[in-house]
Image (tube, rainbow, N blue to C red; front, side, top):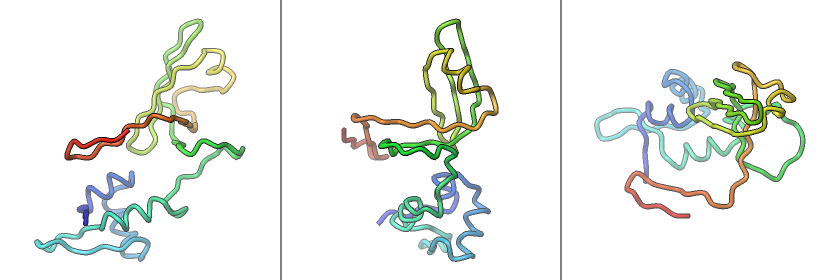
Length: 136
């Protein structure tokens, strides 16, 4: 059974450890203690919370899509030339970078500080664990 200390779990949720402690006090997520008496969150409980609608961020895009990997965030950098642009955004702890036409950047009104949703549809995603094992 995998357990996470409060700081680790908060990082995975993209919130402060104080916020996670409040959620625990409110009963939104269960906690336990390790052998040293430190507060912990069970990995399965954390996964269940992340999968629930309660933990999701509001997605401003309301159209239907088959893509399930969506990152709502803030544009932090735009670098453009006459034809192509690189748009960088942050979604919680995640940095997402997209290359697109400069015309698309203009049409979408993307600039530093814009709210945006990055949608990723990929058939080859590598999953790794801290022990170094990976699967494609």
